[in-house]
Length: 213
Ligand code: TYD
Image 1 (cartoon, rainbow, N blue to C red):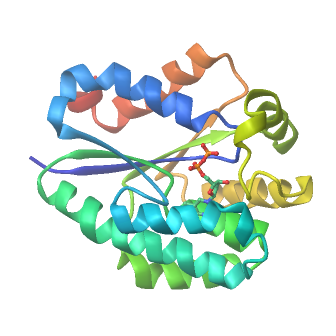
Image 2: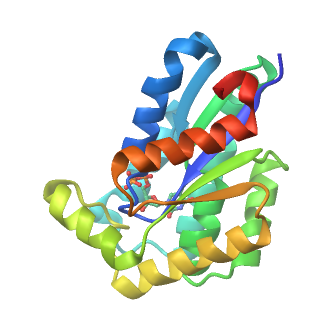
């Protein structure tokens, strides 16, 4: 059995976490233990500790390159301890974010340069890339509005960035999409939730009808 690596991406407020949960509910009965759901940064104890550091409000003064390197370090650990063993065991891995997030947030949002961020992540991932990326697209204003409405008490350090930051993140995502249209499949996340789930289901079915048909 061949493993499959599928990542889920999107700007803040795209509804990625709820969409992922609905897709897991849909496919878990069929896939059982073969489905592994993980997230970045996180997914293993060391990466989860790095996640805490990255999102702690006390670390507001973190240097942008430090931030990019910590995301890449967390990713490296996640690749080695979670992704590679799961793929070798033939699992279907759903990852809530992966390297595109760093290119979009640190490369675009923080303006570190998309190529520079690719470079440190090439070192971190050694070429482990998703076969399919489901990108939930939402205009920045809509995304930010959703965050502010839904989770007043859960807004993290990155959510608090200015609207211009979020615009740069989305633009970088759209550039990634243009560069790699066969891997990255865009879904309009402003549609009603059920339609977003149906579209994501269609993308997965097209990717592998034997697994998701
Ligand atoms: P996430 O856990 O997906 O939370 P949410 O449910 O709010 O989408 O992501 C948390 C934040 O981490 C999000 O603002 C994007 C940011 N992030 C980066 O800036 N770079 C990265 O490489 C990753 C993986 C995430």
